[in-house]
Image (cartoon, rainbow, N blue to C red; front, side, top):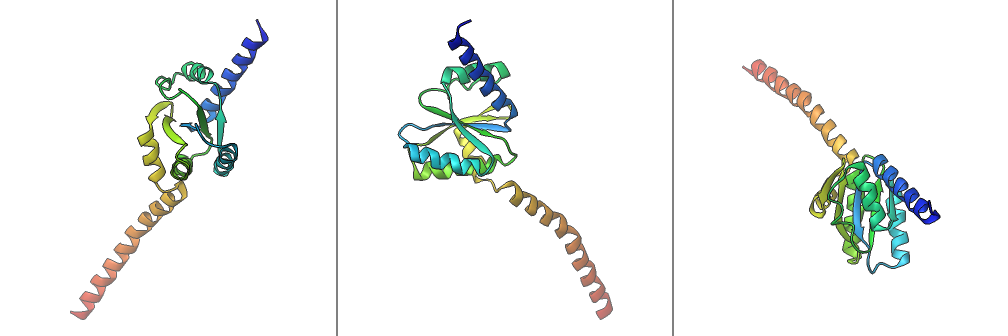
Length: 165
C-alpha cells in the first residue's frame, strides 16, 4: 500500500472519529476569509468547546458514509470547513457562526449533522436563535418554582378572603 493511500486512510479515520465523538457538526464555506479572520473564528469556537477544521471534501465524504450519514455530499463542495461540536451546547456554537457570518459575509453556513441526521442551514440558524443550555435550564427551573409559589399565593388569598368574610 502506498504512503499516500495510508495517509488518506488515516485522515478518513481521524474525521470519522471526530464526527462520531461530536454531538453535532456544522459545515461552512469559508471562501474569501482571511487567515486572521479564520484564526479569530477558531479561537471563538474553541472557547465554547468546538473545533473548526478544513479537510479534503472527498475524504470527509468517505468518513461520513462510513458512519452512515447520507446527504452530506451536497454540502461538501468547494472550500469547506467542518465545525466539530464536542459539548452539549450546539446552540452556542451555531450562534457564534451565525454572528460571525453577519460580520464576515464570506462565511456561509451550509448545514450540518445533528445526531447523525443531516440538517439544513435554516435549521442551524434556528438553533442559533435558541437560548443557551444554561438559560433554558434556568427558565425551566423558574417554571418549576412558579407552580408552588402561585399555589401558595392562591391559598393565602383564599385564607385572607375567608377571614375577611
